[in-house]
Length: 219
Image 1 (tube, one colour):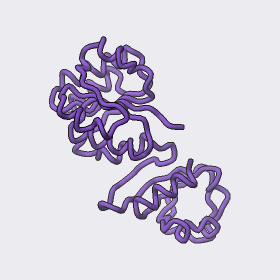
Image 2 (cartoon, one colour; image 1 turned 180 degrees about the vertical axis):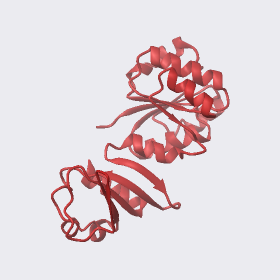
Image 3 (cartoon, one colour; image 1 turned 90 degrees about the vertical axis):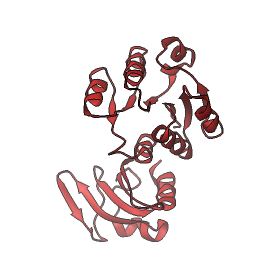
């Protein structure tokens, strides 16, 4: 099911999240206090508006509590970031992810109710957006402009089949390099290995092929 997202702050980090969520087929509202940035993303996001998100009335007027997930990606204004997160929590937003400038800022965001705190210097916006948009992709690591490693939760279409039967290398050009099974990690699993329902598959391949695999097999 298509989810709705609001991204507050359309700088480098927030813009990356906004762009990737749109590419993943999600409905995205982009919000920034800077009109130039909003104009830049008006053709990318589903909707883009100029707004001061430290004003509760502005957030109410945008119907912010109706969004499945709100990402606070405000740049250097730590006070605005904290105040926006606090208002979102008070308005009853279902899930809030907030960008932290440093560890102290991150601790404050957690204390006031952010569900997830991310540090841009450690977490790529694209990686986080893909995790948000997919119920099956648990983690994502970009290897190059075109290739990535993803952790995928085995679903009903995958479990009960051997790697040979799935044959995702031939069908999708992807390779299962390891399987996480509880505390165990099976590196370079054999073709006869049967995928179990709680397995996590570590898959490597071209981004286009990963996206095709996710849409055809994981949804």
